[in-house]
Image (cartoon, rainbow over all chains, first blue to last red; front, side, top):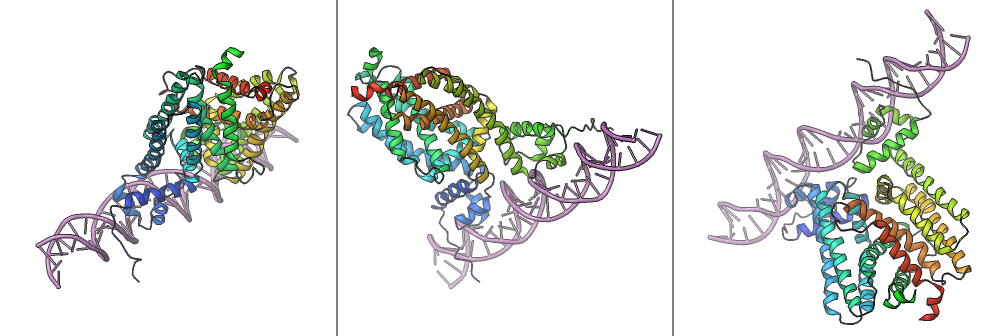
Length: 211
Length: 211
DNA sequence: TAGCATACTGACCAGTCAGTCATTAGGAGT
DNA sequence: ACTCCTAATGACTGACTGGTCAGTATGCTA
């Protein structure tokens, strides 16, 4: 009875293990998931996991870092490429974020990370720096452009960078958790668009004086 | 060596255990927290916990139910009592919700529940019915009143009941997780107020025609 | 094709914890 | 003071899992 082919592919293992870990942690939660589950999912034995990651914690940290960084780099590229009105750019960036957050594994990762942060200071620090702050900076840049062009009033500086991520992340969570119960839910895109329209309308420069 | 007074108080135990469990689960997370920790915190032995709750899961369910229901009953009372403009009532309710969500144990419970829902269908069903839906209904009633009085345009029906809870819950999470890193964060109240102002402004009936 | 570095394996260890149950003790009633 | 019901205890069990390591297989190199 030959073992189902014991291949050697050291270059691919870390990525395979991270993919498997994201799936297993996402399904079972960090604590409930066992390293053996992750190994099995990656088609590898338990010991192999410890060849590439120092501990279960270390593996988790790697999952968060490898899967989040990509998202943000993508978003920042848009800022540089776009020249139009800040409102349009904002809508574009929000849509991109929404799409990213609608991948079930991403929204689960966010959920996992939130739950884990109180227990894992390094994950928390990473999330703060590379998710929260980086996001705020991205949105902040767009707002500054909008203010300079006379599109937004100055309160947008406070509102946009904090409200938008909350809306997107929490809407994503609600959707992922209750999809099957929320029968007459309108498309996520519609909710986000209408909310963003209302917000932008309320933050227009003219509104400041109209009141 | 006498045991530190082995008192008998069957009437108070469940409540004491729920309080202890909320604290311990909140600090360590559901899986990492042991029943023995909870028992110790309540000044009781492990076996006693099983006198009142069938299992660890059951205890967790009880914590969620007992601590959340109270919040919502409080909120609904406001709706009945208030007669003024829908905008003012909305502001009032939002402030109350914000205060409730700023109690560290409440925001932790929300975090715990979110993390646990994929693994605990009963918690998920409870949360859907008694948190999400009930909240939407409450906010929905206010919106209807506002539309009837000519304060909001009809898109408010879609926007308010979904956007407000997301804003409040996620802002609360961010605050609780990153408080010590977010040095120049403005007061939570200011963020919420400005966002709500912008939203309501963008949802005013007149805006519908002004565009 | 023989030799060798090393990717990979899986049995094993040590620790943890949910849940049980035989025993102990508080205190109400008499 | 005695009885009795039952709240409370905590040692114990059985199952599980993170992490280790001695040994095995693979495939590159000469």
